[in-house]
Image (tube, rainbow, N blue to C red):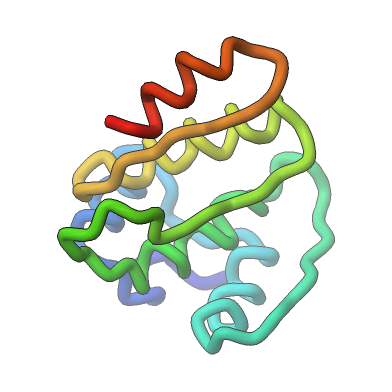
Length: 120
């Protein structure tokens, strides 16, 4: 099982992982990392709690290009409100030491609040 140190992640991302207590990648994280970095499509299937969210977030954040551009750099679509909240929380944890702004947008709440947050 690979360690996250072997993924050659940016120091800011590695520091966040260290603080979260993550040392070893799960099988889905290890198998998907190189595929996602290569730009190829992939479908991964794994049990709940195996780190699927980090499996795609880590390569995305590793390739992050910081620019003074106000348009979204990454859009992640998920099927439920609960997953929107989960993914946004995981991004916040991983980007603690990065200049990344995260916003989860979903239905069933006041659109004006979300619109205002998006405009900021």
